[in-house]
Length: 198
Image (cartoon, rainbow, N blue to C red; front, side, top):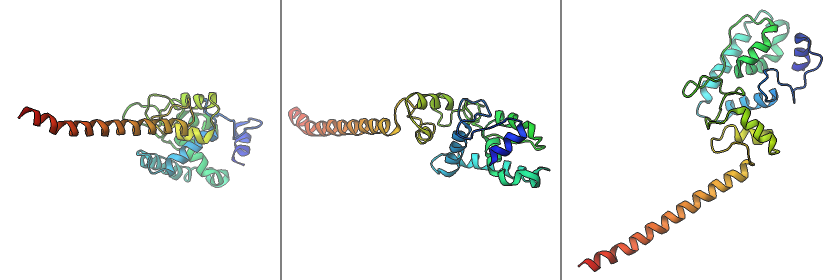
């Protein structure tokens, strides 16, 4: 329904929620909103509170827009979400004549890129969200896999998350097993070595 309204306001005949890319990020808008939702709802994302504050501030500003009562109200959450993702979304929505200034979710530690945009790096692993999206598509992975990949620094989308994490966890188990065996041998041989010195 929102995209029908947006189509009319932007003068674009049809916008398909599943495939549209209004911000030109190379990632479908629906996937970007799903990522925002995952960040806002997943407590293990350590920067979730910053993202939530930006989203809530944008939502508060939407509610003060002159057009709010006319047509924005039913779509306030999706508009606030899209405006929070990237400045490119904000540019795409400039035709809506919103009067307020809106923030985007940014990573001020490593880069000034907007964390959830295509150029951003949500898991700070050195791969942009667009690169991880493209990897997921090229390897036949879907949206749920993308949401795991883009928020997990050990994944880049070149294999299914369950396969990659299983290998990673298996390597950790092998490493710890070898470490325990080596420590056991050291402890076993240690008393014998001291006996031979006497």
